[in-house]
Length: 158
Image 1 (cartoon, rainbow, N blue to C red):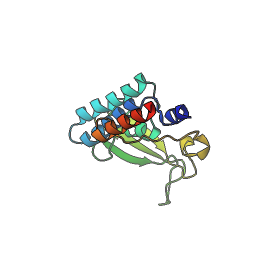
Image 2: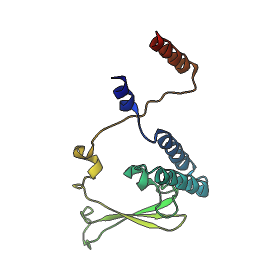
Image 3: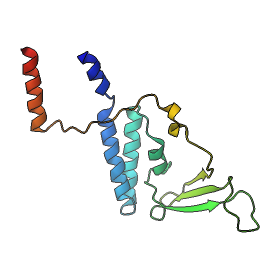
Image 4: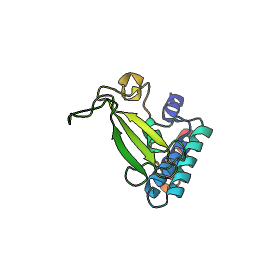
C-alpha cells in the first residue's frame, strides 16, 4: 500500500520542470531589458524540454519566438497587428477569417494566429485530460523535513 502512495506522488522529470519554469520566468522578466539574454534563457528552456523529452505546454510555446526563442511581449519585443482576409467596405467587426500577426523585433519572424471565437484548443477540452498531477512545493533542504524523515525511519524500525 505504501508503494502505491509513493508512485502516486512521483512525477518523472520534476527537476527539469522546475528548471524550465525558472528559465521561463527569467526569460519573461528580461524581455524588453536585455532581449539577447531573454532569447538565451528561452533557448535553454526549450533545450531542457527536448533533452528530457518533456511536453512543453502550448501556452509557453506561444510565448516564445519560434526562430530566436525571445519572449514575446506585444509592444516591447514584438509588433502586433490584425489582418482581415476579406475586404470590408463598411466598418463591420472583424470577421471569422481574420488573423493576428505577431512580428518578432529581434529576428523579424512572423507568426499568424487565427481569430475564431468558436474554436477550442484540444488541451482545453476536458476529454484530453487523462490525469492531473501537481508539484508539491517542499524544500528538501529544510531542517523540518529532515527531522520528519528521521522520525519516520525510527517508527519503521520499531
